[in-house]
Length: 117
Image 1 (cartoon, rainbow, N blue to C red):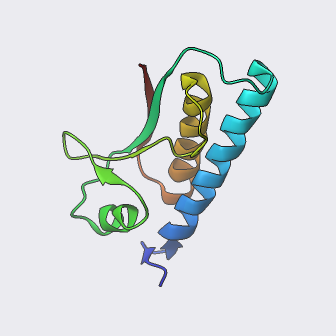
Image 2: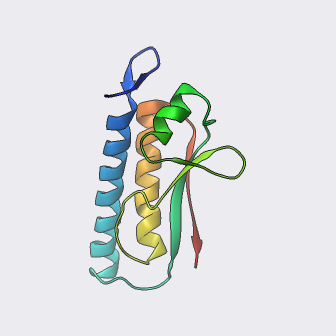
Image 3: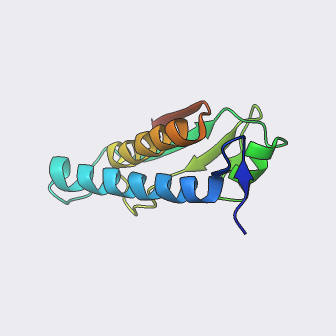
């Protein structure tokens, strides 16, 4: 069952699904265009952080769709593209695409971030 939030009835599950799809396209495109389809260094991690408390309606809806509580009370999703690569730049491209989608469609503060392994 879809969980809608807010005055306009945003379906959070669909927005997260679209965000993951846009993350996959962005990460795959980066891999193909900039790395010639080869998973090269630098290795690392990327994630999106939603500046939303888990106890709110929006937080609960995000957690029901793959987000987890992070240190400091925000919610995070690691490697939203799901692309099985080690390259941090591919993963960050995906995280940035998802963050953009969530900001646009849900109107919440979302950041993309990464770190080298």
